[in-house]
Image (cartoon, rainbow, N blue to C red; front, side):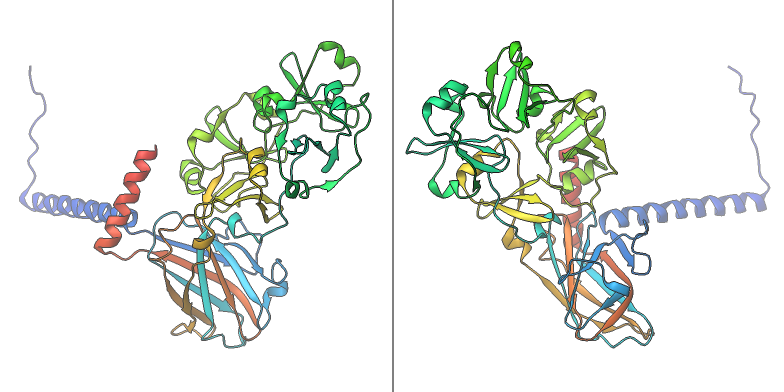
Length: 441
């Protein structure tokens, strides 16, 4: 084989220049690689919020609000002794956070103000709401032989066992509860008629499941959806002739709120007839979800839900999400930005099909603090560095930050920078995190 390429020989001056440029290119490449590796192993994440444009997509801190009202500060004003709260959701392991507030000119001095930071899940920081109750369609019994159904949120007692048998309710579907458990729901009218079924009675006809509501049968979109809420035995078996007794609604019932499903290559969390596509696998794991809890569904099953914007690490877990406290085993269900305790073991059993997310009340109560000082060469910016070493290992992805100004102040911007110093301890933590992520893929 002939080599038709001639050797190119550079003049000495050009050869020298070429050697220098090649060495410089290698040097730049190495510097770039070192910088990328440094940012991976020792991450720096700046987050901010402009109080002048609270609805801007450029804001990366979450929901600044007053603790007293739960709302955004009117005209950016935080009154004396009012507590300002906001959340930050950086991905990574960090050793400290720099927190700064830039005020309007001529605002009061806020030096020596304490800033507190805690870690958990954003929804787990929600205030405690009223205790959860039994959901509609649940069948209950007591050791005294009393039988009930939860209908329209009310606890309705069957006046006799014969009525249960005449209506066809499977006695094995009734969950045994205590007298205290019965107090969780308000009491409704007693059921004395064996001719008519109460609202929220469940039926199965040819493997299709229905719930009775206002003299209509509402179909579940699939048996799979039904089984995220109830046991198979909860439904009364009927034949096709039963469909002539009640009209069938055109609106389908779906999965239990808080259910994780997958379709094609996307994963969604479902809640209140809405589907939220989860941003990516990093967000999925950061929010405490488990791949084993994801249910593969068809396009028809997903199609009954209205698709929403992406569920990101800045999102709070939606209504229907269940948490379990890893120290106390207490359960909570999220509803309308409240954390409702599931106080009864029998009540927990009725939610057993929904997989809880592990959290910790004790850990969420831990705080790191720092004291604001005026930033050098700035007349209206106050900042402090808060250590995160004790918070980083805690369960959750959300940092909740709060401060109470002793004087009235108008805040223009909030800036928070999470960082990790270049130490052997930080290096070991970062490598351990990368190893765990690779294992979870």
